Length: 286
Image (cartoon, rainbow, N blue to C red; front, side, top):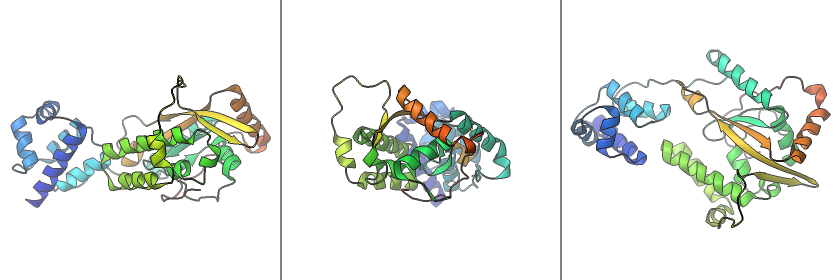
């Protein structure tokens, strides 16, 4: 009975988070509204297949699908594999290829909490220019690095706009996945000095750029970059579903030339890109 109520509360919470009525969710899952109502009240126990059907209809992430299964009294279905495991070797090769193709411009692979997993040489050169070399294998959290006052912020001339947009995206993540880890990340970012003011700042009245740029300045060097974020299609592993591949592109020819010069100056170490090994999960601002 306790498990039924745990599942009932979780199911009701996910439906409300997604903004569906009982009738809408029942239609998406191809069940009766009466049966869904009984499941949400804890008056009926779901089968394993019903849990998965409802989770799929709600577009619940794989990690949270496992949590729903456990709440209903079933074993988890979806596995979470280390990115360096042999069974993910082909995916790792694909990620390495994507990072290499982005050279000499930066590209990184992060997990759902913005912990750095892989980076190409272009990303390494950018970070080293802005904040100095990183210790090999040190855990790096890109969310902290971007929002905290003492890492990238001193060199990001439009930090207010970029930080506000980024924190709003983490808010959306927290609402979508409903996990304590993402909620903790959001609380940490909001607590940094200046974030509240950035979130409350009025948008510029001038016509906006087509995309929000990241404008860096250090000394006489100015860089303007925009980013794209890609995910893996049809993942069936928690690790893979939560990966994000972020690629940085120059917004002007001057920025592109800076990255090309940096790459040329280290050409003896170039050739194929050599992404860093997966960093251990953990929080670091450096």
